[in-house]
Length: 324
Ligand SMILES: Cc1cc2nc3c(=O)[nH]c(=O)nc-3n(C[C@H](O)[C@H](O)[C@H](O)COP(=O)(O)O)c2cc1C
Image (cartoon, rainbow, N blue to C red):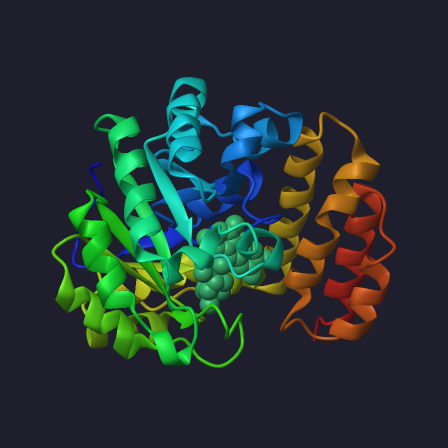
């Protein structure tokens, strides 16, 4: 996969279930994300071609390079799912999820459970790489199951040996969930342990942090999750910082124009079903209010918004209240 090189790390939007659908991914791409991935999709969902799965897999040509992230535990089923999804939507790469900490996934030996079973992890990678028949297969891991079993360098070497072509490392253990801090020292160890490109992930929430983590670790790319969900302009800000151009300030009016645009595109994606689309946007709207003035009152109004017009009203009131 050819990616632009230009003295800066590639910027990856982290896969986030319920967040990174085609609408949000395109918005992030417009703001400077280089590489996009679907949220995790179950191998079984693909093999059963269920309706929800086909929504997860929707993407537009301008999202390329686009990866489909798969999760599962059975090497044969994952290989079949990889073949099926390549025929179905022709992604640019397949990404394997070895990091999900959610019980429903882990209890079936998927996601981060595979970090505890290196032979199975190797077998999953091997089967999917063979099934993908030359299409790149990448992986996303956590640094280990718990603080007593941090094994990211071992996992990375195994995955490299099985033909994984790029590795994203979230610097937390499964046990940590999203608490504590991402351990970028371990990410740095992984960079030194393998030849394949390593993408660092965890707690990048500003251009300054991105610059510091990149120079500390030598990662080839930086993956951003929650900060992009709250403030997608972070991609533009990081690009500007690496180009040594001071970042332009995002005004309150810019933010509201963006939020309205996001809602309008979501309604389009829901084929005009405004109420459903606005309901699906609720958690996104809450995320956008982080850091905005008068956040508590704003959230209270946004909890109840059901139409795009209603949202526009809230936006214009908020801009007027904070003009001065
Ligand atoms: C709401 C949410 C959903 C997520 N869903 C996925 C997922 O589907 N696949 C995955 O590999 N990671 C998933 N993650 C983890 C993120 O990709 C990322 O590794 C994590 O948030 C750490 O990065 P950050 O500190 O930049 O947020 C999810 C995280 C969040 C907050």
